[in-house]
Length: 141
Image (cartoon, rainbow, N blue to C red; front, top):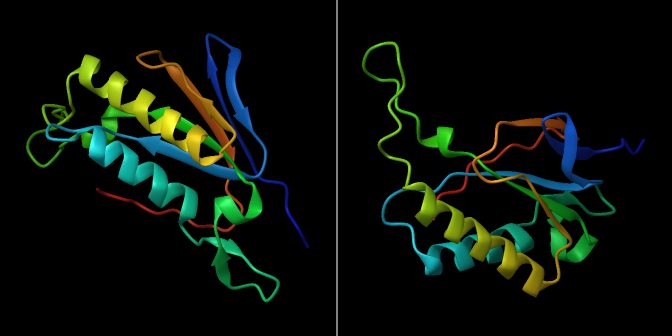
């Protein structure tokens, strides 16, 4: 039975990005990340074989299936809570650098052929998704 997968992001109650079946990518940027890393990540996301083939094996990519991609910037992925009770976000890249690299990632995904929706950089976003799988991966470039 095929389940409906989707993801959307809201800002102030208004949907700013929404996809049907595809990839919901929460993307954090850290110091040292650069344009080459953004391009490499775009290629990896678009060609990563995580969708089922006719035999139920993870052999198809978003490029193979035409899956949509939702990219949501998420500096809190670099939160470090090893000390104390309040996470430190010093490992997150400065906002200007992160915004530029997120834009480059989105542009490269689109260049590769992806239908891409996005969140709103720096906004307080509410992300909703139905995870059909579950397949949740952490990729580091």
